[in-house]
Amino acid sequence: MSSIFTGAAAERAGGAARGAAAPSVPALPLLALTYWVWLRHRDAFFRVWRTETLGIFGEPVFALAAFGAGLGFYLRSIEGVDYAVYVAPGLVAGYAMFGATFDTTFGAYMRMMNHRTFESILATPVTIRELVLGEWVWGATRAALSGGGMLAIAAAYGFVDHPAAALMVPYCFLIGLVFAAISLSVVALVPAMSTLNTYFTLFIAPMFFLSGTFFPIDDLPPFFRVYAQVLPLTHGTTVVRGFAIGEFSMEMAWATLALFAYLAVFTPLCVWLMRRRIVK
Amino acid sequence: MRNGDNGAHESGSPVIRARSLVKRYGDFTAVAGVDFEVWPGECFGLLGPNGAGKSSAIRMLTGLSPISGGELLVCGLDVARHPRQVKALVGVVPQEDNLDPDFRVRKNLEVHARYFGVQGRVARERALQALDLVRLRERQNDRVDTLSGGMKRRLLIARALMNDPPVLVLDEPTTGLDPQSRHLLWERLSSLKRQGITILLTTHYMEEATHLCDRMVIMDNGRILVEGRPSELIGSHAGGEVLEVRPPQERYEAVRERLEALGLDAQDGGGGALVVFGAEGASISAELTDEAAEWTRRPANLEDVFLRLTGRELRDE
Image (cartoon, rainbow over all chains, first blue to last red; front, side, top):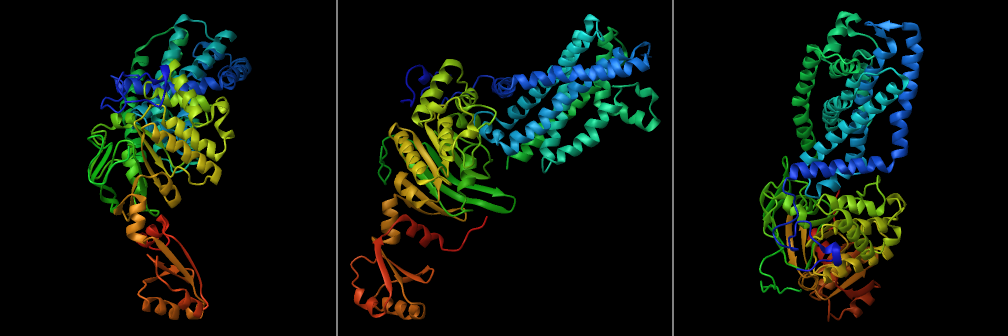
């Protein structure tokens, strides 16, 4: 049959004829379509790369100046290292969390409700599963970018100098997967965008303060210490801090296991909750 | 590619076939078992008041809503069993604008094409040709929020064409557009039809249905009331001519009785008017002049059919 297009534009991706019962669906739809959803987010990110780059590298310049050089001047050392060396990996993990969380809460909510981008994507061969997984992997990518930006500036300040610190970037991706899965589950449940503020107030912000970012959780009052132990960022910070100084411990292995436990629960949960919200 | 009424179709199988199609939301039945077929190259209309079940039918067809019962086939593929393949064959123009504000005009098309595996040079060429088709090429590098309502709707059509679909599904394509935009859109859709694309559209503009649809169904409360060509439906449900009579308020009943005495079926037309369907040839001017009633004769149209079949009550969803 004919095509409304002429020349090269009429080429079918799968070589199938128009109207034939072999439409263009890729051989590995889950992987290919998740990747194409991820590419959409990547393209949107690079379209505004100037502002995004400023966010990724600009804020760490000030955060590390304040906590590392400023506060660090008074605190001198903690757990046997300079405060700046202690706090820098904490900020890397914390910023990874924020990077993933902003995009998969406010960003995803806007795409779902305000811009109806989800609806337009679901009219293509993409199903809810690939749509959500694309958001999820992109959230983790944002975490690696944010964490990586913080790490680069920390290295420039001289707060991080061990080669093993490079492992922090892929680990930020893992931290990002955890927070993206939790955030997407929350987005699937909130009635309005303002409800997301509650998630930040009660969950994300306390986590940044209590997860060993700025000081060891062992010094917290017992209630907060137990609370901090179940927060995913605590485990992420533990591992990232080990990489920063090139020390590997059993504690880091357990912490990683804890993050995988979070993933095992929240990854299927966010897909299930999103499907429940969108498919009616 | 016009098709006959008694199954003498050019191509053997329908592009879309619904059989006893049902959609339930909890206890509420939005689509209560409908059957229809859309044949290759035709433009088929789903008409009906708000809540008739049109949008539910479209949502099932475009994979946004699971089917509760019956069967829905697109190009012979079961929508429930092969959602991806079906979606690859259909171009969807939604009721509400869902263009991506993160991208400019042409990039919107290219990003959409990628979900169908159309990428790179082919995607770019297709995007330009689709923009030509809807006369938006010169706006290719503009932000989508700078486009007018009519341009956005045309861009949505261009986007729906990126997978080179044999079927185009449009949900109220001209709602909210000014007459110029509406006519340009009709003209573009007719041209797509001439190129062999099968079109299914919902609308509650009767003029639109008359203009575009080869065949249509009128739905209400989840059921199909009538099916046929616009001219057939007008002929069999509203007759050739409609007489509209506006008697003085106090003479309303008297005029109605006099019309009935002439063997005419005078119905309440709303707003103090009486309407008589199939009034061609009836000689009544003397009767009405006596009563000092205002009256007009006009050809029957689809709106008459629609109101006659679905009533005059307001539908609030």
